[in-house]
View 1 (cartoon, one colour):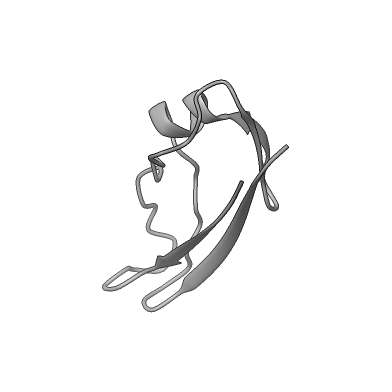
View 2 (spheres, rainbow, N blue to C red):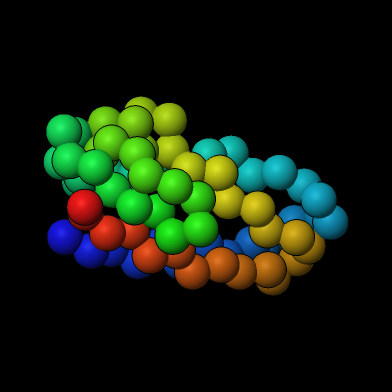
Length: 68
């Protein structure tokens, strides 16, 4: 019912955008709260992913995802 995503940028230039991170293994019909982003269905998170902004080389971010 809960997951943690660790994103780490290696070799990124400042303001370089990374592609959306498509999640796997979620229940398609379950709603998930993505910390700091919003609520989405598992199907949406697996098909379209989440945008993660990392600024510069070695930037990182931790995102908690909870089923609601």
